[in-house]
Length: 354
Ligand code: NAD
Ligand code: WQD
Image (cartoon, rainbow, N blue to C red; front, side, top):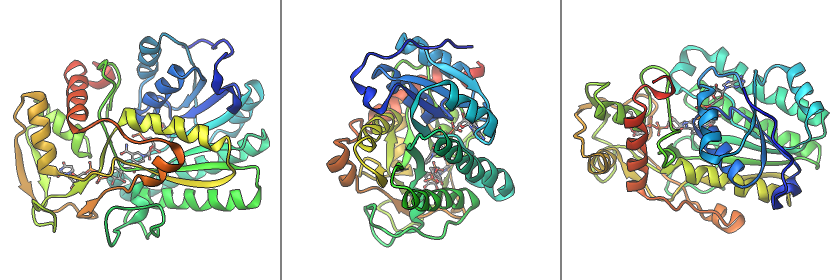
């Protein structure tokens, strides 16, 4: 669909002219692409649309009043990547592309190792070939496993993941560490996200999961809109203040800003840098339900259910390192996360297909 952008005249061009965003049509990628455009970057999105729609990118352009280039394709397609790097002057890659459904990864591990691990290796090979060494990778707090204490700082050890999805993130982190050791030109950010929620305040872009959602926030908002009957609260016997699971929910717009800060930081660094992207505050499932009810004015019907296998009791970030080294912190609170999710859900009951 989209049109080539004019060269940027902005101050961020030290990372050079164009940013390749893999998986940029997806939930976090689309919000980050918007932030990049707003900051004056030229953006090329590569996405195979397995879990997204190009409509998200049309809306990103609508919101920003700027254009981007979209290539529909797969990160495992080396020929395509080589062509992309040859025909564009790319200064850095934000790598979101991959599959992310924990439960599905247990059933289809090959898909996860192929898209996530093989895709990332292929991307790095093409980057090295093109002499592009700046990479921001979407990792996850899942790599910490079940930490002994809270909050989780980057110095905590990583742990054996409980599912193939988590494995792929850890394997990619490990090979990126080896890569950076092998060649000092690499400058890599491993961003460990906590629980992204929320949507852009326009209500035009947001999370649009295929089929029945697995995660709490989209599930709850589909209950509120009447698409799903009730929410199951997975476990009320955790050692937390109200017995339900506690997580660090972070607004996707704060997360997007974190990528811009990381991008800027790696232009002055080499090697691998790890940053947690979280708020530092944990909320329980019941607190989230109440906050969503308040923000939406809708009752969320729920039932208490068994614990979900593989879930941990609590998980929240120590975001100090990102604050100190990136000058970034999450600014948006729980009410804004809930209000923005509800606005998006109401305006787009069928996601981008509606
Ligand atoms: P998403 O599914 O909305 O976005 C991923 C995008 O990658 C989709 O648009 C999909 O079509 C595309 N894609 C998948 N495989 C591809 C391939 N082989 N080639 C090209 N494109 C491909 O997911 P998201 O929530 O935006 O997550 C983005 C990244 O952040 C993922 O790597 C995910 O693992 C990671 N992450 C997400 C969360 C979360 O809770 N959403 C938490 C931690 C980490
Ligand atoms: C949050 C809380 C559930 C659904 C997952 C991945 C993780 C990362 C983020 C990618 C937990 C409870 C949930 C429901 C519920 N993704 N819950 N009823 O499990 O913290 O993290 O997404 O990297 O790797 O595992 O997020 O939103 O699924 O769950 O009670 O229908 O909500 O038990 O306490 P989670 P979630």
